Structure formats: structure tokens, C-alpha cells
Image 1 (cartoon, rainbow, N blue to C red):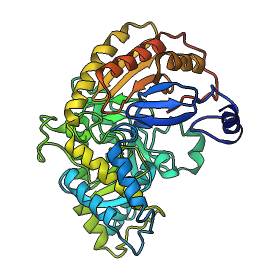
Image 2 (cartoon, rainbow, N blue to C red; image 1 turned 120 degrees about the vertical axis):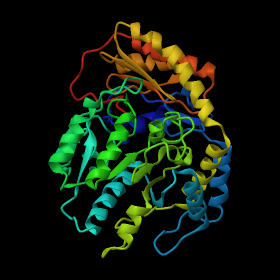
Image 3 (cartoon, rainbow, N blue to C red; image 1 turned 45 degrees about the vertical axis):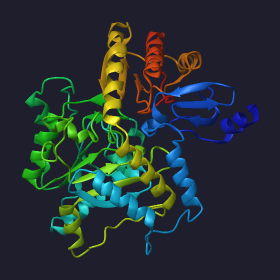
Image 4 (cartoon, rainbow, N blue to C red; image 1 turned 90 degrees about the vertical axis):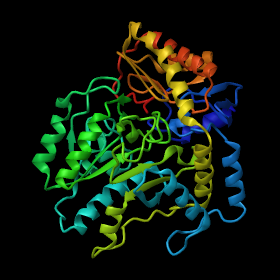
Length: 447
């Protein structure tokens, strides 16, 4: 084990981390259900679903079997010039699973690429309408859409990607919606978006946002009324609305997709009750976290406008587009979403998180507590040391990965009440740790 970790430390870069620096890493050797097993004998509850994707838990037997069976037939074939049954079957399942009218599917190989596709699709749509000058987007401050250049350019302009401003295209940013998800809507919260769209309406192809839940740049939960106003504004100005449901989709916030919080009754979600985007991005839990895959899904209006234009092909094509192994995993994952009552499971998780996390508001270092669906956040005034966080992880057997001042959980949707209690106890212990001074350039434990 020591030899492996030594090589890792010397040669392998990890996400948002420096070589040779930071706390020691855990050597994972197996994972099942809600638990990750390490080489030194630890069994850690995966309280963050391995970056929010393990909705069904690790190594869901149905998904593992689907990948194994597909691997015996065909691991990959280019999607240019070919199609195959797994892609078609997954497409059929998605058309039935997705909101009605969102049914033109472009398979991508990661969430970031799905966002890139959505932005390009919006520009090509405006070009098809004879409006090539409309090539900019409006995004929200506090948002996160990925780490590729185009996705970074649509993420919080003052967030984790400021180092790379020089290679990013320029877009416009509205203030983050400050009206809390559990608060009373204030119309003034929409003023910034209205002003920016009005000022730049002839340049704007689309508005993009994470519906209700802003993830990797602040773990913020905002009022769904904002989305209703945004849908109306986009319609009035001939601007497309892109919703990034990569983190919020597949029951994570309660309903099947976060956009459904705009319904009069988010639990019933009749098709006419909630707003829908022109383009949506999905990923992460699409394959149950087993293998990378995402999708950019367009409305018929967007797809047909592009298809019937002078440049009729959508100009994008990943090498691993519609990879058969990933499609097989997606089919199995969607079957689980269809056959399990995850809405009830998430309601149970939300109730448990609220009960356990609400008292943490009284912690001396607590700034805020936020809960929605299977998302729980303790925002601290200042973060503890990485060493103290590692100590809590080892002592509690709960894997948490705080970033900046946010200690959060987004557990698998199969997590038990007893496991939720352990997760919340670990969050409490981190909240009780002594804050450490901010060290410039210390980005370990970032999202």
C-alpha cells in the first residue's frame, strides 16, 4: 500500500490539488452500496455520492450486470456513421423519462461537454434564424457548469476559475438569486437579470442556470419563482433558456428534475404545471455514477430550427459519443429510477437532514444551514484545517469533502436513516473544529 501511495503522490495529479502537498489520500480498494472500503481497512459512508453521481449506491448489481453483458458484444464503436441498440434503447427510455417536449438527444461524454454542446446549440439556433450577432450567453454569479473552457466561461466569474480568464470567451452575468428556496419570493431579486437582458438582448443567444440548486461554487438553494420569471423573460426576448440539471436532476432536490419545483405542487408535477427549458443538460446520475456519460437535450423547436437551416448539422462530435458500455449503464440506471420510489426516499432523507442539521445553526462557527431534498449544507464562517477534516473522517467512518466554507452532504438515494445520522454527526464534528487561517493558494478540499 505504501508503495502505491508513494507513486501516486509523486506522479498523479488529483482534482483541485497540488502534487506532493496536502493531506494523505485514501487508497480505495472496493465500493458497494453506500460504502467505500480502503486498503487500510476503513469502511467509509460515501456522504457525497462520489461527487453527486452514485444515486443508486456503488456497484448497483443491475448496472454492473448490464455493463458486463454489453462488454461481451461491443465496448465501443464510433457514432459517426453507425448506430446501435444500446443508444437507441437509452434514447427511448430518456424520451419517456424526460419532461414532455424535450426529446432531441445529443449524447456527450461528460457534464462539461454537455454544457459546451448546449451553448453551441443555442448559438447555432440563433444563426439559423438569421441572428448571428446573438452569440453571447447570460449566466448567474455563483454558478458552476464545468471545467472545460466554454463551461468555465459560464461559471461564476469570481469563483474557482479566475486564473483562466484569459482563455475564456466573454459572457454576461446577473446577480445570484438571493431569495432562499424556503423563503418568500421578492420580485426585486430578478432586477439584475432583467437589466442585463434588456441592455444586451441583441447579443444574447441564451440564458443558462442551475435550477434551484447552485452546486460547485457555493451550494446555494434559491427560490423556484426565479425560474418562472426567467422563462417568461426569455420568451419575450427570443432568447433560449438552458437548464443545467447535471447535479440537480434525477430526484436529487426532491422531484425528478429541479425545474419541477416551479409547479404549483412540485410532488404532482403535471406536465402543464412547471416551466421547461429549451435545452437541458443531464449527467452524473444518468448512469448511476458507474461510467461517464451525459446528454444535451433540446426541444423540438430548437432541433427543427437547426435541422431546417442552411447549416443543418449540429457541429459537435465526441469520440466516445453514445459509448455502448455507457448506454447499457444508462438503460439499467433509468430502469432503477423508473421502478424505485425515489421521491419518497428523498423526502425521508430531507426530513432526517433537516432534523439533524437545524441545531447546527447554534455552532459558534456556523454561518448558515440549508437543506433541500437529498442535499444538506453547513456553511461555516471559516473552514477547519484539512488535517482536522481527515481526523473526523477516520474517526466517524464518513467520507465528506468540504470545499471553501461549505461542509455538505449529497448521499446516495438509498442511504439509511442510521447512516444519515452518522453523516450529520460527522458534519457537526467538522463544524466544531477550530477554524484555520486562510492560506493563499491552498485549494485542497475544493469541490
